Every structure is written in structure tokens, then in C-alpha cells.
Length: 236
Image 1 (cartoon, rainbow, N blue to C red):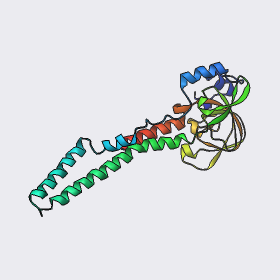
Image 2: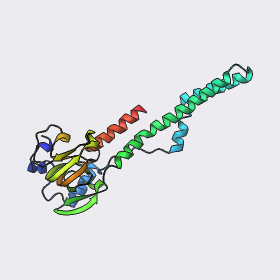
Image 3: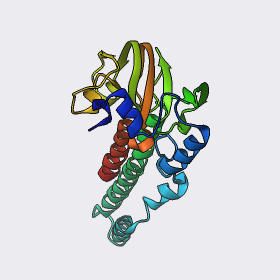
Image 4: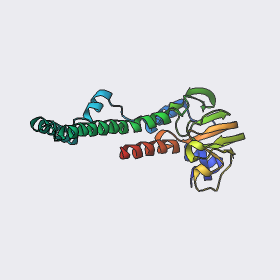
């Protein structure tokens, strides 16, 4: 069964957690196991070498050679229009190079924009004590506290909910806020379940206590970021 279909006690058991949450030692161990709770950045490349590369690859070199031959032909037999052809070829090289360069950086910009949507700090319970930690240090099994205006830092299952409404537009594309409550659910998909809050979504109102079950690239938000990177990169 999926975690949103479990009872509260079963949810704790499935994540090897408890109502007093994880110890600091166990949280650190899980951080090493699961990795930090953030969207992975696209590998950055230096601008100048990448820009130059767009004009000196094999196809571009062939076009440069064609342009040079056109200018040589114009020099040997003026008035044949070969110079115009040479300029046209150079124009193609420049336009293609600029477009390819822009396409190459679209994945980096798209994922960078998604990374900014996640919060930097979060209230978490560790060993029964509430404290504030960087959201990147959250791990499955953590218990977090949320209130209206908060961005949900990870996929989590509600344990307590008081007047909770959440905007899931970043995940579903639907801007209407939805009521959320605790208790197990019979829904098949987590994003449709009343007892689940997904990373990147906005708490419109209410207060909540929730059990984290997926972080970083394992969350629904992380999967969208990965798909965004893949689709834009393959289209480049």
C-alpha cells in the first residue's frame, strides 16, 4: 500500500519513525543515505568556451569553408553574386550558433527557476524537540510543522491538520486551493489524496503537522524538475 493509504501508525512504521520523530544521529545517517533535500542543479558550463564551440564544430567548419570559397569565387569572377552567397552562409552560421547556444542553456535556467521555489528553512521535530533547520537537511521520517504562507519543503503525509488548504498549481497546473486533512485515504494517486502535501506547493491557510516520506529528486517536485531538464535538453 502507498503511504497515503496507510493509517498514521502504519505510516510511522513504514518510515521507521515515531511520534517523537527521528533522533539527530538517525537523521544524519539518513541524510547520507538519501542525499540532501533539493533539486539537483544542471552542470554549469563556462559561457565563452561554449559560445565559441557553437561556431567551430564540424558542420560550422564546413559552412565557413563554403563561405570562403564563395568569396574566392567572387574575387576571381566579380559580379556573379558569390559574395552575397558568402554573406548569406555567414548569416546562417551566426543564427544557428546563437540559437544552439541559447538552447543549451535552457535546461540550466529552467531547473534553476525550480530550485528557487523550495523554501530555505523549515520547522522540524527531532527527538521530540521542535527546531528550525535548513530545508535541504530534511529526510524521510522527519516530522515537520507548517502554517499558512509556507512552501511545502518535501512530500509528506498529514498527521494533524487544522483548516489546511493548499495550492497545488506547481504540480497539477490547477490554481484553485484544495482542503487537506489527516487520516488514511483510498485515492490511488498521492497528488489527489486529501492527506498529502507535495513539495513546492503553497499552504494557503491552516496549520499542519506532517510526516516526510520523499525528499529531493525522489519527490514529485523533483521528478518534474528531472523531466523538465530531460525534455528541454533533448529538444536542444
